[in-house]
Amino acid sequence: MYIKFADTHLETNPRDRLWEVFNELVNDCKSVINKLSEFNLAPVKPCILELTDAGPGVGVSNLEVKFRDAEIALLHNSDRRARVHRAAEDSGQNETERSNAYIGDAMVDGGTLDWEYYKRYYGLNEEDLQKKSESELEELEDERMLNNAWRVAEDVRVRIDDEPAPKGFLRAIVSERVGEEFFYNKEYLSKYNSTAKSKQSENPGHAYFKCVEEFFDLRYEEGELYIEFLKGDRSRKG
Image 1 (tube, rainbow, N blue to C red):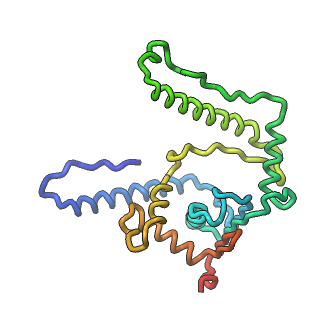
Image 2 (cartoon, rainbow, N blue to C red):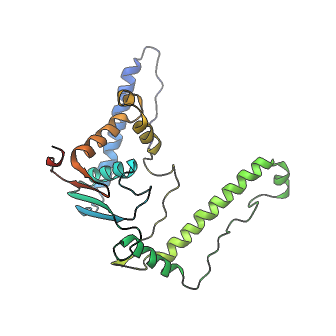
Image 3 (cartoon, one colour):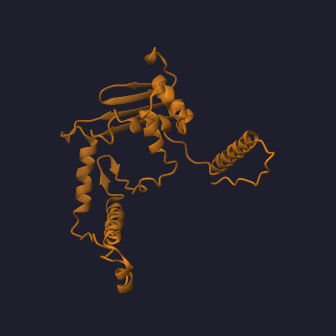
């Protein structure tokens, strides 16, 4: 989706034009929502329990973890959502650790795993190499290793997808690269959170971030190892 700005004359009021563009954007968003409704997608289960291990990327003290959970509760119109950390070293009580064991079993199947799909100087001939500086060659090498890592990740996904799991079967996916995710706004969220309250309104997206933040503060209960959302329950916040 993109917005095309029409040519304007000098006498056009910039604020009026901005309002027109805003309305065009809103109408485009409504069109997308209406189009999605035509697919009659199955509703998401209203009650979700997420059991994770403990770590900086998944911990309930992590700003983005809390913010994304609140976003999902709003988008899916959830009735109840809970995210709980389980014991990090007790496989008997930690579904994440047990899942990791099943992933290991699926990976160790006797087959080899190629890690170098892209060889050194991939796609370059002798003439190209002569034109590259040392720093440019180092950048190409970093890019090559990164591409190899993503290619191996896809192989791992294929190998473990649909393999047995503690309560069913594993579902494996490879995430998008950082910055390529749909509606990627981590940079703006971090900036909003690190800015003083009195100046947060100066940040891009502050109105949206504030809305979700207030929803979390009002509707969520937060503990040391868990967060929980219960639809319609405001009493927990007083």
